[in-house]
Length: 390
Image (cartoon, rainbow, N blue to C red; front, top):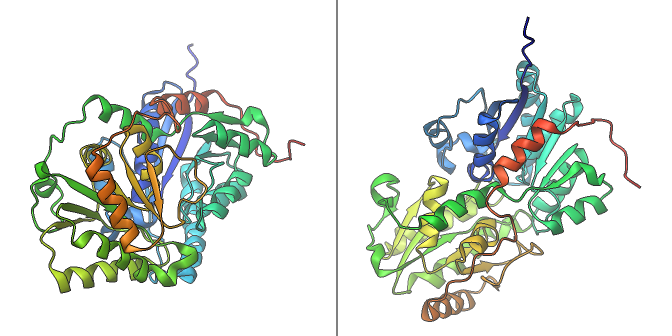
């Protein structure tokens, strides 16, 4: 009789729309791996149309969703963030009990991912963390390092991140520099960079239909949780900076962090009062299409980690505003400015005038992270007993 080896069940939890791009190629590799079985849980703002429901993109890519966890508490303030995380622990615990995974995968540093880490850890399920060891501002910093200490397998995106995780007392043989899976998508875009789709037809959005051949910029600005009460003032500075530019502006909606209500209200109020002719607003976009849009733009403006990570690989200039990405390792493509409309406008104009693109920077990986992650998850021997390495 031939003994059939059971596959190792890998449960990936996606809690926000950007997280899908951060894990997509690893999910593909897990699905293809002969020793692995993918389990998929979608939770948090990734389920909400208001923030760009990610489910349609995920299912269109051929993935089956095992569980949907509705856990977002309205309010977009620190209290609602804490309550959302608490509800997430309760609901994810039930999901893990039902799915009985061998390893749970937590992605990056969204505040909701703390629920994934706590639920898995308390249930003695080995936890693998993607993108630990990085440095930023915002609540993300605390969440990321806390998840590192709860995790058993560390799938970091850079050599600097690996050094930091080891310095935090993690055993070096549990820390793997795989690169970031979103660089895999960026690598594909570098090979075929043409803007071969109509964003206004496919993704609709609100605002003027622009002639993208005349040039455009992309704006993506989130609230800063440690400065959430200033989010409307912050977004107004960016709106003032781009409104008079003689160029198209493609603006993407913020995430669900504390302060996003102020950011969203600021955008809506501006749109209704000014009815800008050079701007179009989108909720969400499939990851590779978004990267193609960036690749063909003059620059990205805002405070998204996409500007620091994917844009470095693509060589796209970035105007990074404020302290949300403070301390994160970055390439030469990034210009850092304060929340001052004139400084933001000056940086954008400088980039447009120079018409500069940069060499691809492999700071966050070489474009093969997904396969590396799947191989590690198939072969690693996790130990849920946690001890300092020194």
